Length: 81
Image 1 (cartoon, rainbow, N blue to C red):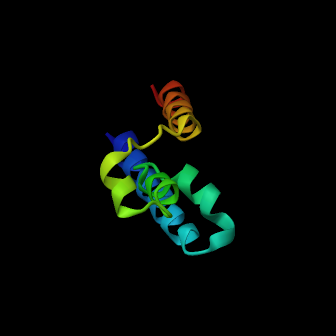
Image 2: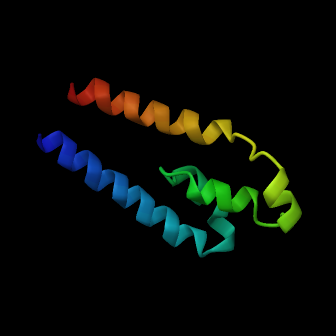
């Protein structure tokens, strides 16, 4: 049970860290990768899209973001289970 609490705390730490990094234009790429919810990657991808593009285009899948988090969760699972 303690592992779940630590996981949730770590999850929110990564989320808050990514939100702080999004404020600085130099770290936008890193922040979009650290965001566990993918909101930073979504905002970075659609930043300069027009309203027409937002309504009609499919959002591209940023593979590196998901592979990173899958590997992080797999390592945590192997360490704690």
